[in-house]
Image 1 (cartoon, rainbow, N blue to C red):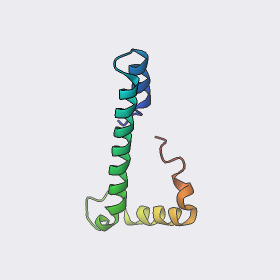
Image 2 (cartoon, rainbow, N blue to C red):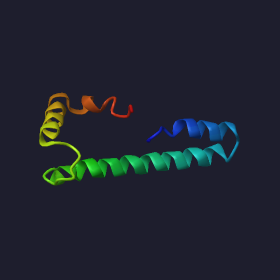
Image 3 (cartoon, helix red, strand yellow):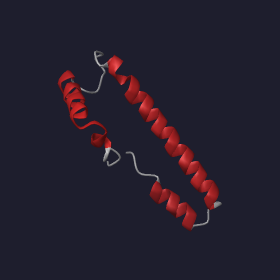
Image 4 (cartoon, rainbow, N blue to C red):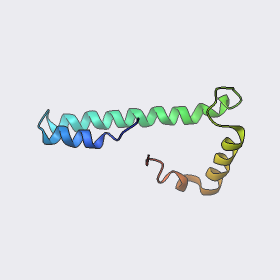
Length: 82
């Protein structure tokens, strides 16, 4: 189950487990890497939509495309919520 990293980061900083600057640097690098991987997956996923293992039905995929076309970037405003 994906969980946010911020509570762990705060716990490590409060417990003085390591230098806070290093903790923030590693957390920033990890979040940036995760975001980059998610972007790459999302950018190239459309070419696989006709495969049987694709996680969305054609109807759900088209509905998501219509929503994004209608609301654009605003539709991503709360995308980080679980």
